Image (cartoon, rainbow, N blue to C red; front, side, top):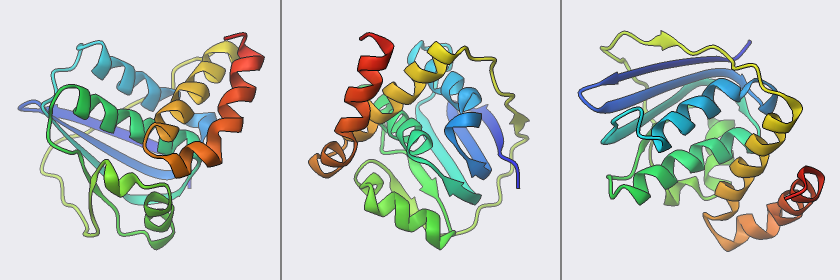
Length: 163
């Protein structure tokens, strides 16, 4: 199944529905949404993520989710809510401590809002590298266990990107 990113912002609630195989190779659309949140282009006071149709997530995508949680924390918002009924994805989320940053609800969703498809943004190799770096920095900021697991990735990326 190919990845799909759907999004809606209704009454300052931003709803993300992510499905399929979520890999760094197709994460530029999600990265753009996260950047729009931080730039205050979107005025979200509540964040909801639906992963019920996700079949796989790599660490970059998990880091993008960590970035959403960081946005909520920096803006004194309630913890984002994350819905997921996929056992393999939940196992990954809990193993990387996303339950500390999200209220994870293991139930199906039935969104009553119309969602728009988010297209991948054309990223250069440099932009992809920066996206991967920032996602992993957000991931290691969650806790020491993630720092131990991903610090070497961050160090290599910084070296390759000249940061």
